[in-house]
Image (cartoon, rainbow, N blue to C red; front, top):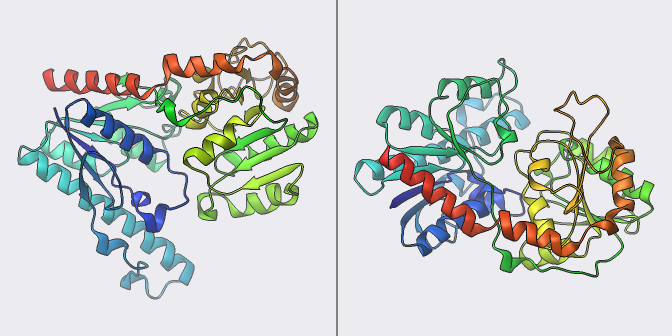
Length: 386
């Protein structure tokens, strides 16, 4: 097959993405490279710095060579000018690459386009009717008053891939053709059967992710917490970090690392006694959960989003209901009956019940790159033969 992988986000560039946690980029590269290994022709539409086995079609480097300035905003406040100009820059970078993809489709260079992080493609997809499938990486709209609702409602008939079944919960009846879980290249993750006696938190430090709850749990359990997060403050909430996180960072009870990748990331994760993920939002997938389990590190997570699909309760970690009401989503029947922080603390105390090799086997059986690629091939073939 001739496949176009469309990931035109400006955060794929070094200038705007270096040090930023942006999960779609490595996932798209892994998928593209694996498809090439299986004999497919893949064109990858993204930033010029992206390294891939696919044929790279790069975005306009002139757009990202300098700080954006939009002349029509010259009378606005400096902060507003900067923010608004950057939003326009992001859009134009995306549109340029999206147009290149659909021009190639018109010229017979592609059989199908897989849009991995893009919205502009919907408009050209509608115009051309060229076979296109979309992977969604964010939760779907729950309110009809949002711009997200307008966008997805307008194109609800397009072909969508969900990254978990829980992601499909929405007030919009969208055309989901498959759920495909993310996968890992397992040779990049080592298991440690003798971890250190500390908990870990890995991810963006923001209220939705519950980093402050992780600190509260660690204090209550009497264990240190090691935090690794993006080195770019713009990827987080400055006020939340300054008020809820920074006062606790003392290098002993709470230790902070910057952005980690590759072996450094694996080494950080595998030394954790457990990974704490006390989400306040409906996380569509949560790559770090499978990364933790691949290192043999059990996951302790609130029952939000996809957590209960990814973590095998009582086997690879523990699922905890955030509260007694169940208003956030249906309550589950979990090993630990306590809820909230109290439940998370009990899970920490019982973490010795979890076999770290069982965590690794769970990933080997359900969350590999090979399985992910096979599932995508099946979707592409289905759309092209429909």
